[in-house]
Length: 325
Image (tube, rainbow, N blue to C red; front, top):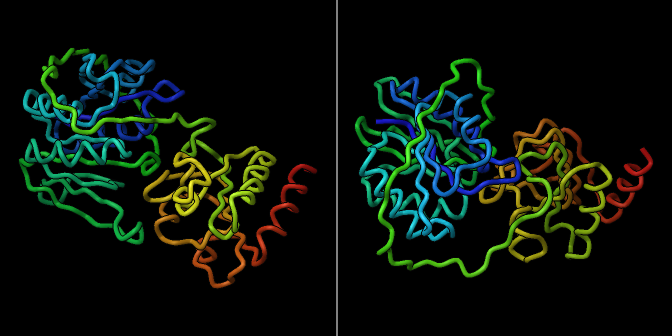
């Protein structure tokens, strides 16, 4: 039995989002539980897969590459993973948490009898040799610790940015590459992706400066000031969930428990109240600055710097000052 880091798809840096974070946790877990570390890739291998796998001490790089996996259909991926679990019987599976994983992981748990924990932020060996998994709960306000019974497999979904990427330190390996056969020809696709959009620009998870806007901006036209200030500071624009729900901005720009988990050097929030669901995505920032008309807004409890005032008066002045630097 092994600790398996599961991934599919590739980002611009040649790796699936959060892959190195999960490999770092996987390596620690494998050492604590006395298991081998395996990386499972569904679809074509990422460009840097072998290099990164070696640096993180991966014992085996498993690959399932079937034409049916070219498009992301949840039914097909669940079937492929269920066949893999029946063949390899991993003890722990580590997944990135996105919309696709929310469809796949619970159904895979039902097929395999595994426990499943979403919103994971940590995992390790418990005092009695069991697996303990820590997850964000109640909108990110608190942490829940789950104890998984010995011998029961567990699937853990970890949002990108929930962990710090672990710098490999010695112990490099030469992983075996293994092609895993699966039979997917007869899978009935009950859920089909009819439209998808690829996000553009830098990923929020990688940004060092983020300027985020919330409902307090008042209208979609006013969000342009967020984009202008982000550009002037050399940062990335972002938003709270209400702006995504109103279709002011793309979902790839959402920060929060159901969006992106970020760790920037500076997080500047304008017109954001500071609800726990949002702060779960930015509380790890080194510095938080906030602009809000309500002096009692929750976000000021997190902010090192705060301005109580009208965003539409303050943002243009900040843009002007940033351009004059």
